[in-house]
Length: 602
Image (cartoon, rainbow, N blue to C red):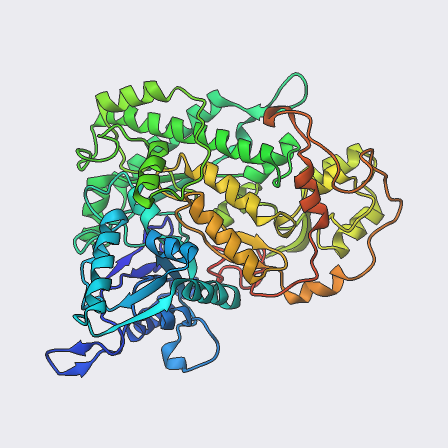
């Protein structure tokens, strides 16, 4: 089964559900054997290449395959540059659709059995405890000899292969089936069989419905206000007004939009999902003088996303009082009084534990619950954090929830090339008397990284640490706090310096334990950057810090008071080595040649 993926841009974005029988399966009608899923994926891959928006933009496709499918090992190698090219899809993105049972087997050291959908056709439409019960029953059948075509492998071995191919080729991405379904408000009307190209959409699909989602993003940094003490905090009143208008506009688009196929139109009008996200998160941290790698940043991620989601859900129930509930509301989690943060308990019950998420809340959710019980919801889903790579660049803020990739880069467009420097950093350096020609030269030489410029005080190194200088655990922790409130998912890239099998294993297991639904690209530092990491530091006119060295400063206040961050954040920013460097990475910036064709950048 193939579906057009939900996305705000008109691109080919399809996913293939694992209903195609596995390689070697018996074909009863012809007494032949199946070639598996790969030839069909090859057709979709070539279709995406052909659909290129009139020669202006490449098509983009993402295929999802469940981890129990017998062809999963071939699927993992689709993006390899070696092997039989007839069984490779060089232009297609791929993602693993992983059930919780597999992760439990990995952690507990158990075996994993691979099946063909032709012998267990119902697994595709099951999730949670129901999936586990059916899967174990099929394993017992295989053990009794009632199923001939299957393969048993150590779960940890398959997990290592997944992570190994993710590191080697950047694919398949790691996404989790059960959190997407157990926490879905719409589980009463269908199953989420995949996410979309950017892994932030989690809508149910079927043979009769193609999921579609209209996306929009709020510029979070535009909702920061400065207090009398000079510190910044989130302007709740302004945010509420913006989110209310945004939700109304997204709901309007559902009715006035053009739908190419009836299945997409019927699905969108029946469920009315929208996906409002945010951008400029890193800029907010700069205003707060808070390092990304800090507990204060995690708390800000929690509180800011709580506010955005609270106002979005409130706006949807207000629209319901004006325009009516969406058609499939009855029986949804909304109808049952279960809000997104409540679904963490459903997930923990489904897994039998294995959920470690902080669950505090600060807003008046009781009033919202009462209003939803009275008026219902206008939209089945409201929140999804998209990558915003292009629109955030147009506005001039950091992309969605991403850490700063570089504090200095060269931008190219039709007017030529010009250097872009992090404006918050420039302001800080000027205020401290450190902005001069030598500093500009150092920033250029070290590609905007501050970690090797000794003139930079420790607190600034931590606050303006770039993506590869931030321990990826902080990215997951912040994402976990956001996911608590979100009814869909978030596009979460993992940045890792000195990637290793152990680090990958720890990070992706942590993502699962923290209840994340999906992850996006794994980005590691390119080998071409090794040379600069081994040269002498930029030590001209070094400024001594009062804390006795790099990484020793402590934040003094809460998120809203402009805290400088904690010691662990600064140690991460200053001490991460760039000597262990390997793996695929996209280094393109907006305006660079090839940026518009790079699916990672869009």
